[in-house]
Length: 487
View 1 (cartoon, rainbow, N blue to C red):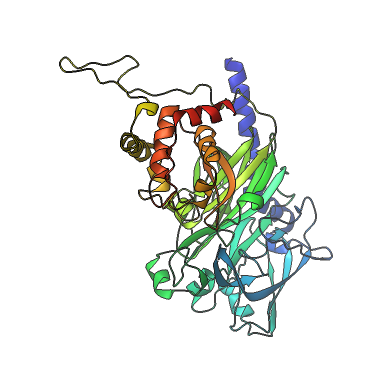
View 2: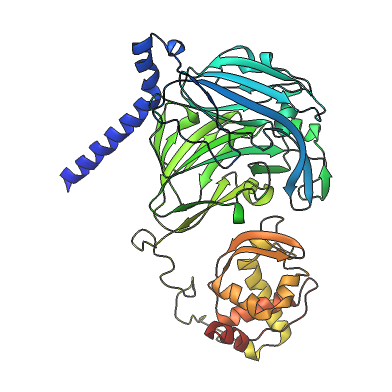
């Protein structure tokens, strides 16, 4: 056993060292061969493949350094922030974040920035991968209907943010003008099964979160760092439902994660996974077995992990109200066979009695008899149901059944709830995931099945149906029993 542990530790150390050398050692090896990375010769010319999130271009592999032609267009265009709410985004390449650029150390990049003639404002680009004044910003300031060209050499491997740096800089970034450029080391990064591009940003609107219609930028909120939306890839739901990223059990996933800001630091986390490796801040340092990694505004990180079990893994900024109240939530859907050794799922379900399983009696007084739901008056069921609701439902659906916008649907005046009693009972019994529409709004969250008795289900649903403008159904235990039996 000790010998096996030592072998495993030695193998992990060797793998860790090899990957570290790929990032931190490539510059030294190139210096040995060519005096410095600036002197790496280029062979031929190629046009860069640019991709919109969450996709990334083809890995560079073992190709030699080249003259890499990058053509990027600035577009100012209206897009959806969340259902019923739109915003005029300023974009690099028509997406937020902007197009992903993939290079290797030693490339000579010929960068052309075009400002579409329909745009209203001048723009430029500051690439954190550039060694030069303003990261290219001083050479790329361009008015609508014009273009600017400049060149730079990729000297340092890593994952870097780019953004607009035209005054007021914060406003241009806050409107979506950011993206990522990857500079791979000589020989390329180790291959993985799946790669995806995610970038967090915070948005500031005149209206409050979820207010309908076209929203404009609010400078005072931005100065106060009072974000209305904190999202991945430019909008609420960009990585949920049909837009979720995917993998299969046994595959290794690599996420290129950026944070455009302009203000907030990201506490990046995937619920139910542990990052096997994190390339800290997109640089040479590699951390292992990480739960949550900090990504500063204007920074990035590369995270890798192997998916061992199937299911939907929720991606969040673990400053958690941003995830469930402001939009910083995505999904990784993994398909494949279950592995009960790693994760069993529910093994047993029962009722929790903090005072113990036996009947407790006070030394004096009458024994309290639990009344079955079928023998309760409506008033008794309402009192019991309210207590159960407060203990089990309150956090997600709130005190008056109003729910949480874009996260958990309302129970008040709910067309979904009132349309089908058996469906409601089944959801409490078995849980529910996937997209539903409630009162005209779409929700795509998860409700776990509730560990309460059939009597308690009848009581809590009776309380909900007789509150907040619902249809006043008196739910019975026999109805719950029938649904549970499948009738």
